[in-house]
Length: 339
Image (cartoon, rainbow, N blue to C red; front, side, top):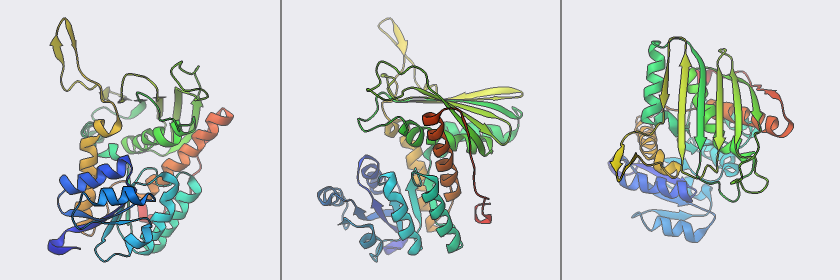
């Protein structure tokens, strides 16, 4: 720890998400400070580091993790770079908050799982921030009371105003539906056993060659079904909704009716334009929980097992998208480390 027990954090990756986490730790979350940032773009790393007094800039995660004032690591680089950074952090026995995905595929996620299991204790929290969203937390608490009875179906909608130019059809599954994969497992307490991806006629607003929207059906070992409408070029904003249908009732979140206005002959509200805006509070709550747990010497939140399970489900989803039909999900036996 740095002076006065403050957690020194190295942030790896200073793009949109990483830069926002640097701001968050510097301005919002107490008990931690950013002592190092890492980016392949040296100039960008220096620009971000200059915003925080005493923060150093690096182009190599190894040099940052070796610094004496780094007690923990927040990984916000691109998915393909996660495995190397995670394995290095585990070698140093450093606590980690890793943005999703844990890694982009099941094989690399399993290597991280095995490395943490060999260490003998949890070190990694995976950044599935919806578990820290107030509405999702309320829905989870309601389901845990049992008032609604056994969950039968979960309906999810995930819409973006427009997709980035680099987005591919498979990324709708691996980068977007990954969230609903985790939400399904977390809300229902089930593992996902099979995935089917259906392909409606692409929207005229979708870029050439992009299969958008898609409709994903997830089967679970608890006998429930979860479906996901993923539509990343809806045009009007960023929207995430979920409705659970149970034996004795239903519950829905994400309607966005926190404030409704009436003016000039119209009524309505606003729609968030991106995930950073929609889940700002969830990200704050997630990082705060990670910092607090780390300072206590604890690890909470989504685990490497959760990251591995999501990667495996998404991999099956991509196979269904590309080859058609229902694809079973095959997970390794869950290690005792993950309960």
